Amino acid sequence: MYNHHFYEVRSTVINGNNKKQYRTLFFVYDNIMILTHFFQKKNQKTPKKEIDVVWERMKKWIKEERGY
Image 1 (cartoon, helix red, strand yellow):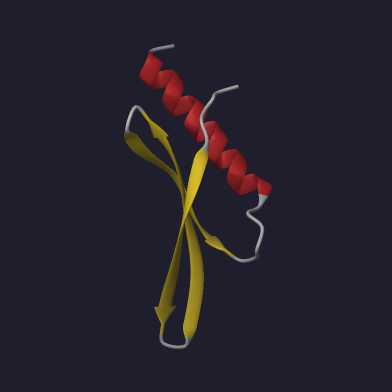
Image 2 (image 1 turned 30 degrees about the vertical axis):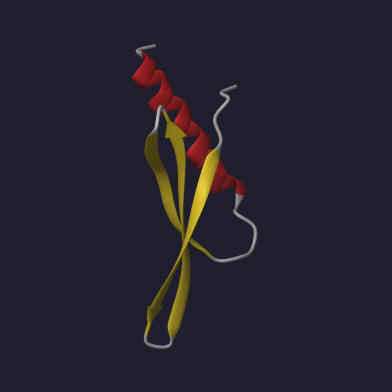
């Protein structure tokens, strides 16, 4: 497995009386921030399927960056 971690930025969008929470998930590789996923958060815990998307995109990006 990779020695990389992903991070989360929280955003709140207010439109009138509607307030929605969004998350941007990213990782850092050689001082570059790679944004991998953006989704609306509907409950406290980040769903496993959203985390799986990040890991798959991270692995793919690193593999392509290294030329494998």
